[in-house]
Image 1 (cartoon, rainbow, N blue to C red):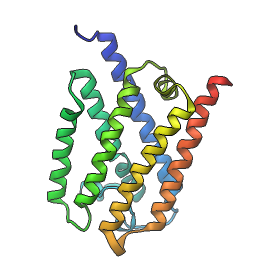
Image 2: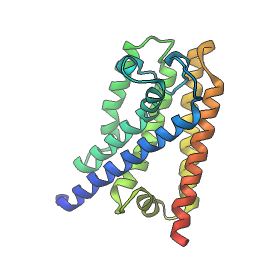
Image 3: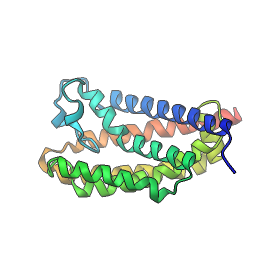
Image 4: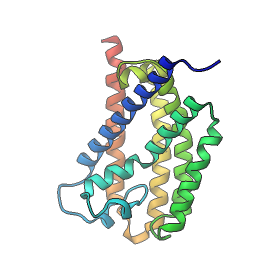
Length: 211
């Protein structure tokens, strides 16, 4: 039995809502985590280094945002593909594995390593399940999607804790890869900011249910 046009439209609307939220979150992290001083791209310790694509036309903060969104956008697109086209999670992960394998072949190993890639793939695999939940429910905004998908603050916090741990594993892999060129202080500041923003957002979403 086919998927109704209304159901497909709902998933597309949810996709746009989730992507807008992820981009707003990444911009907030960048604004709060990066000190207001000129820094070079090579000073920024970020999860994956796709610098060759945009460094000439964007400032450091925008580069930071693009890198924060790298795994999120791959996972979100894969989730939509899986739901709209009836594909398995294994099937939608395959092109992501190929894409990151190609990056590995084309980026210097002291910048992007198999260590980073393997941790990113774990994060993406986890996020596909999360985004699939959000895409499958109905809601007028991101908070409503989270409410419907997770039902309780405790359940959503469990997800956020696991996501934070996976992201920190990516960051540790990146620090190992960069060695002396890494910036642990920025990583710590970034992680603290991410956790704080997500915790506050979760409180706001579920408190409005009972407020």
